[in-house]
Length: 340
Image (cartoon, rainbow, N blue to C red; front, top):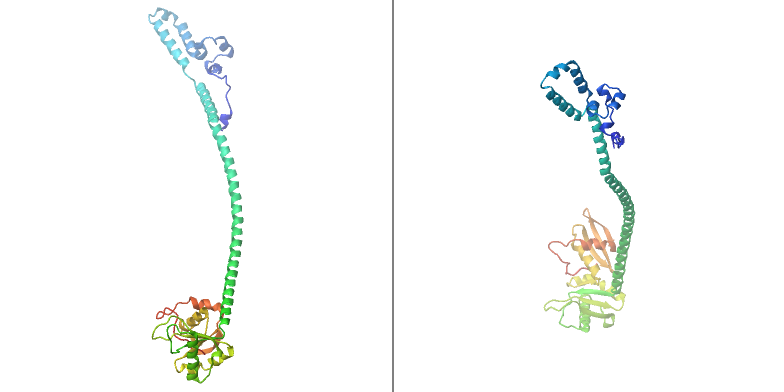
């Protein structure tokens, strides 16, 4: 509020309370004496003029027929002038109006000011709540970051554990096949061929092609792989009773190759896919790949020269399995793999 509004006028103030004696030129005593007469109080100038005029021209006015009309006119003019406001009255009224406006302003703005104070208080409370929410969110974000990092470590550990489990499982399966070999090119295939017939065919073929003699007691079991198709010779899996017998049979692999008979280790599905991938997916960098005792070995081309055999580690299996197959061959090779 302005300073003007703070200075309130008295409630009993009115036009009649103003001291207008200065305007008439009368003393305060004369004003109190003539207070009952409105004309002499507010506009004494016209009264003095009237009396002076009567004093100087009393005789003339008494003899003038229009004297009564002039007095009436002067009386009317004096009455009208008495109702007019002076500069003092105008300033006083302005102050009254200003005070009234200030009072109305106070009355009208009081609820609004109260409402604004309430809103400001609510805003402050909400700002505090928002600040608390921000602090809680920051704490939760930090917790989430820790949990995410921990989860990543756990995932890496689980993945590592899964790889380890897969490796152990694959190694155990491969170990169970340590006495097995796969032979391709054995003739005499037939539908529903028995294990005894297959065993006899294997013994006779190896003896005929290499001179190495096997007997039935050296072989635990021998059987064909896959579904029979007329005109095609299915590969044979031979499980020897002793590992030493398997090694002796492997030693004649080169002689058997001359008769288009190939001996290879009986690899697990994973090992066989990895070996085929190494041989076929990057012929430019891989010079040679083979398996021995269930392990895969690779010789790489280094500027046209090989750098010796490298045992392929299990952690490298994913790299080769995820590489695309050559365009001309979109599936793993089915041709017989050559044993070293």
